[in-house]
Amino acid sequence: MSDYDRTNIFARILRGELPCKKVYEDAFALAFHDINPQAPVHVLVIPKGEYVSNMDFSTAAPTEMVAGFWRAVGTVARQLGLEQDGYRLVANNGAGGGQVVFHFHVHIVSGKQKPRFGRVHE
Ligand code: AMP
Image (cartoon, rainbow, N blue to C red; front, side, top):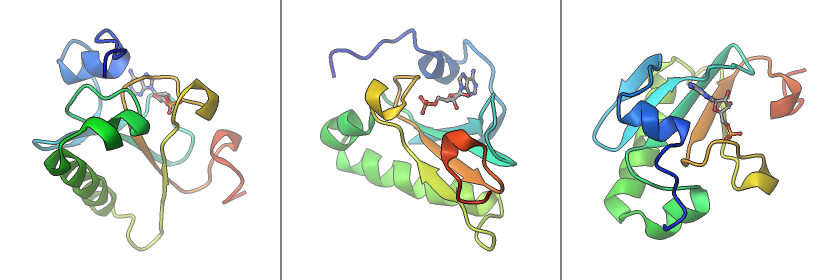
């Protein structure tokens, strides 16, 4: 995708230029705690590739990457011990969809959530 900005925050985290509180990493994905958590559990999972958004990722990523990424999302949720309590997956797509960092990512949130993530547990 031509409009991927290699200076975005998550690209810099992937390159090791910025720190993160890592919770999981494999060949396809990196997961780390959100710097501004909206719930007791708020972890971001990002693919190891230059994808702007879900629209870009689902169109341009090789099938192995799509499968590996989504398997990683499940692995992280399990690793966080969320199977019993449940969790939400949120992917903001585009500025109009609330996306702020333009490297595709999925939020894993669990527990009482602040308004940005809706009123599910309020
Ligand atoms: P979105 O609106 O879906 O693009 O969400 C971007 C998320 O990235 C927000 O929840 C931010 O709190 C989070 N964020 C921004 N910078 C960092 C960082 N350096 N480390 C971890 N999370 C971050």
